[in-house]
Figure 1 (cartoon, rainbow, N blue to C red):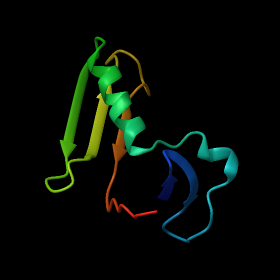
Figure 2 (cartoon, rainbow, N blue to C red):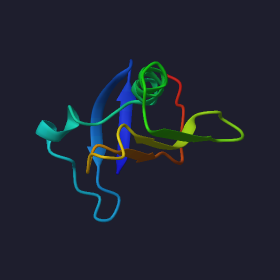
Figure 3 (cartoon, rainbow, N blue to C red):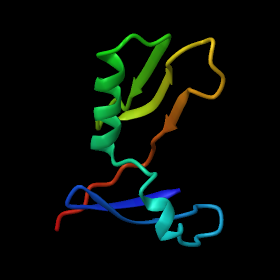
Figure 4 (cartoon, rainbow, N blue to C red):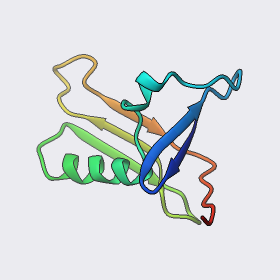
Length: 90
């Protein structure tokens, strides 16, 4: 999925495999890079089973995030992959 963010808000997203637009109703479930950082900080401030973060060596954004809140609970994990971050001047 390719996500476009302007002024800190997600304004559009497209599925990479077929270039169709992500329905507007799904945009609220997507995260900006800043929101990913916020989620990481939130997880680090609480007791979680495990957290693993890999940062991009050049742009320093989190390119992979894995958080397991409780190993006894199925499907409570978060796994994000971020790539090809581009910053465009307004």
